[in-house]
Image (tube, rainbow, N blue to C red):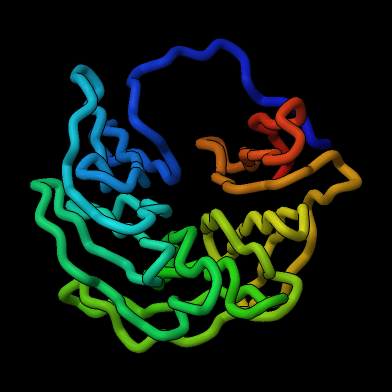
Length: 231
């Protein structure tokens, strides 16, 4: 049930480096660029325009979630979530110790149908990953975060996406894509036995019946690709 999903492809932009990506309601593509110079931050690619830098963010900008007229962007080295306006204005949205462990911190980010934001923490400790749940106030600010899921199962928590009451999480170090219930209980949808090497992100297809996942396959480039599985 794990299938290659790439068919016809077209390059629409050339960027210095890329990590997270999301698409706004108007079709603008927003991309995190983690270079260690002035090009690092968020770039935008309008549907009929050229790529341009929208905001500068230092460190390692990683996850991007288009949230109405703003973007929520994770920075993995310091474990911070930034709010970036579509005008390029940037402010700290969430700074919490649980996003900034000794290893790689805040990574994937999404928002559920109920309105909560979820942030994946890749390396909460030597063998532990976690998901934080963050309520969102009426004015768009972050409420008090809580741990939604945590443990060795989630070590390597990377890209995360939501569909209705369910979350889907790519766990790179465990070579799995997980479905999480409302209570945070995980079920593996795809594993190394299905051919996964280093799954780094997952999104729900437009029809809602399939998940599309990116396998970075760091040490096995031939296995890298975009795959489709039934949701």
